[in-house]
Length: 297
Ligand SMILES: [Ca+2]
Ligand SMILES: [Ca+2]
Ligand SMILES: [Ca+2]
Ligand SMILES: [Ca+2]
Image 1 (spheres, rainbow, N blue to C red):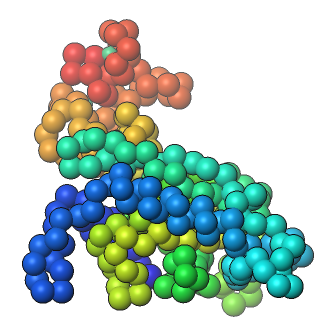
Image 2: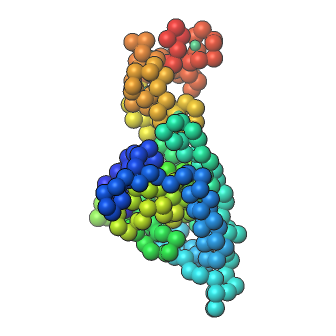
Image 3: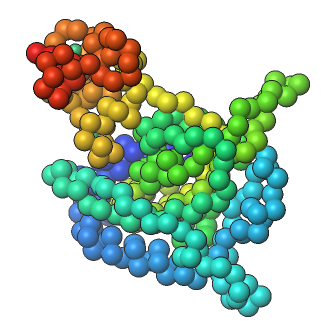
C-alpha cells in the first residue's frame, strides 16, 4: 500500500460504511451486517492466532538497529513446538461509528515485537515508519522497508490504533552521506477485523472485500500534530476521545482540529487556550469549560 492508497483508505472506509458497493454486474449491494461480519472476522482471527506463530527468534537475536522482516508460519511438523500467536497478543477494543452515530466495539490483537526506547505517538500524530501488510492467507499486499512519513489520521483505523503501543527510536545519527540511522526503534503488529481495515471497499485486487488485515510496523520517530496550528495538539481536539476528529464545538462545519477559533467568539484559540502558560487550559468563569471552548469564558 503506497501513501496514496493509505490516504484514500480512510476516505473509502468512511464512504464504504455508509454506502452501497456496486457488484460485478454494476448492481448496488448493501454492506454486510456489521455484527454478523464482526463475528465472522473474529472467528477467523482467533483460528489464525491459535494455529500460527511468528519469527520471534529473529526478533530476539536481532541488533537494536536491525530491521527484521516479520514472517508468520503454521504450527506443525518441525514447527509444532512454536509458541502460538494467541499466547503473545494483547486484545484491544477499537470503536467504529456508523452513519447513524452508533458505536460498535471491535477487537483487534496487538503483538509487541520489540519494545523501543522512546515515547509513543497518539493515534493522531505524524509517524515515520516501515511496515508490512498481509492478509490472513499470508499474502503480502504491501511492504515498505525504507521509512516514510504518514499522517496517522489518514490510515485505516486499525493501523492508527496500533500507534500508542509502539515506542520510537533514540535520536537518529546522521551518516556521512546525509542519511539518518535509527537505533532502538520499536516494532509491533496488529491483527484487525475488516471493519478496522477496508470492510466492503476493497482497495486493490490484492485486498478482497471484508478482509481482516495484519500490519507489522516499525516506528522510528513521530511528530505530535497540530493540524490547525492553534496550539492545541490534534489528539486533544478529539474532545469525547472516541477516536473520531469530527468534534465541532461551534457547529460551524469545521471540526475543531481544523478550526483556529473553536468556540467562534472571534478570539483565536491560540490566544485564549493557556494565557498564563501553566500548561492547563484557562477557564475564566470556572464553569468547567475552558475559555477556548466557551463563548462567554
Ligand atoms: Ca471525537
Ligand atoms: Ca482547533
Ligand atoms: Ca475562540
Ligand atoms: Ca469557562
